[in-house]
Image 1 (cartoon, rainbow, N blue to C red):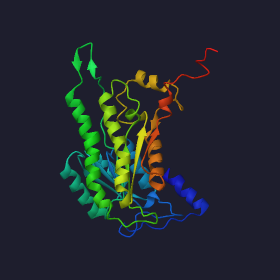
Image 2: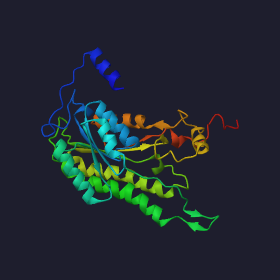
Image 3: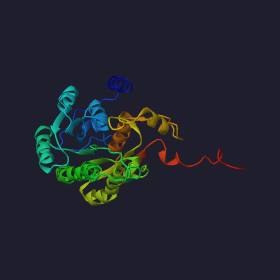
Image 4: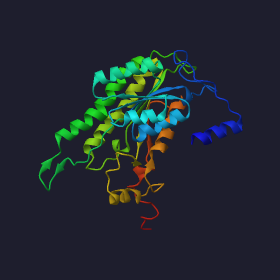
Length: 298
């Protein structure tokens, strides 16, 4: 991908200026359009899945990334990405971890202008197991809530102060926050009552965060992926995956982390996208609606 991109730029005569100092400008603009080549992105859960995919895309474009993750392979992932990638062992639920990570980032890169909250965990359990007469696990719910909701909120509340220190660009923009929610915020099956509620909480933060940070020049966008081939869906059984892809979806396959990363890049680069929860799920909400022609009795 990187080689093809360089060839394309050469073919059309596009010359990109060197990276700009974060203390002077937040984004480089071509007709007032920001570009990921001139950002420092702080990515929670950045060592795996969607977080890793967007990190690779930003690096490929010339930007810098911070992989804030508790994954044991995080350091190796960052090392393989080169000198523009930094790994910090960070538990998003712990304030000290986040503050220590932010200090490392400021020392190495000078600051942050894009926050991508992609750290998350999934769990599958119904509200009540009538067969075994067993209610939903409190421990599972707390685990999901602590990471998916509190962890995201914790990182964001600490990071916005640092982002507000950036010099505004031509659009008076100082930063962008991307929150990874899920289509399960809107269409959860009974076995994802806990996970779905945590993602509903994430989607519910988008508008109030955007309103509260507007005067500081910080945009907030929620991304709601559908079924994506990632470590989170790797636990699904083949027959379960087959069930979902045979529904009325287009295309009839799981999405890729790279496809979600492409949307995230567009949200970063387009200054008009703000206070929105954007679904990228192959039209999943329509998959349970009958086909008007096929189901018609006329």
